Image 1 (spheres, each protein chain N blue to C red):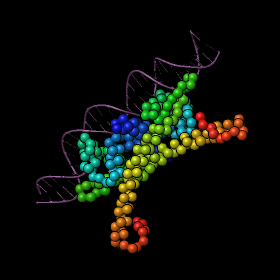
Image 2: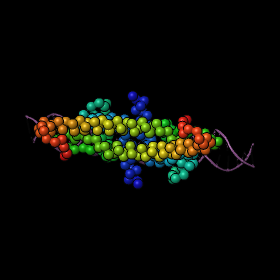
Image 3: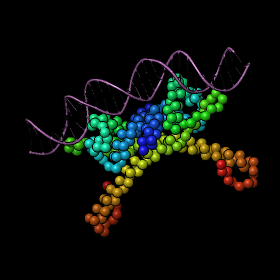
Image 4: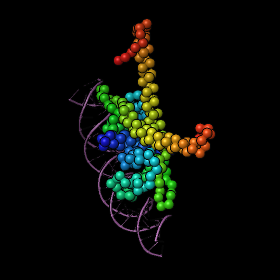
Length: 121
Length: 121
DNA sequence: GCTCTAGTTAGCTTGACAGTTAAATAACTG
DNA sequence: CAGTTATTTAACTGTCAAGCTAACTAGAGC
């Protein structure tokens, strides 16, 4: 329970930073080295390195080693976890309105037993 | 561009806090007053009030006034925006692999001109 | 071994944010 | 109007994360 929560904290925190979102978006198009990722930003390399560490710690990216390069790779599972959480909330929310809708329709049918089914606003 | 970015920052930041996620989850089941929302938490009311302000500022919730109560209401659009951003990254990512897949299939067909179409693993 | 490139770690400053208590506002109730 | 309930604002504290510079590690190439 708390483990999942911690992971979600980390993922949403990671995505809360525009630099990190840009990095994720870039990695969505393919793996890249740290220098390639740093290119578009007016930020020092250590800054980028820190962002990558944040992304790595929450599982959003992974890094291998190729010669002196450390190519970064996007991992979709952490993204899935974030979407799943949001969708879960949305699902409940929608369900609730479906029930309300149903309830209103029932009320309507009680009042106008044989009238049509339309219940628009 | 930056406006959307700021909104996303705010939304992901809002969702990065477990208390706020719990509040969102609770509100997904229906509107609630500040005291009702505060109930489950070992936190003072001003603390909750602050969290609600964060959620309100990024558009995740809205608040009306009914007597001395201020019922909170979940707004799905901000949730949608967050999911949309993630899905956009995922879409690119998937597209890329579809292309790779296609490429591999073509390579395979070159090598084994008349063999079957299966190219698993 | 020296040097160039790629990247990380260490140490620091600054600013934002979570949480607190105490006091203020707003609306209902007698 | 005085009192009660619901909620916010103000002011303060402690923690944590973003950014920097400077120094370090790791591998490639001469």
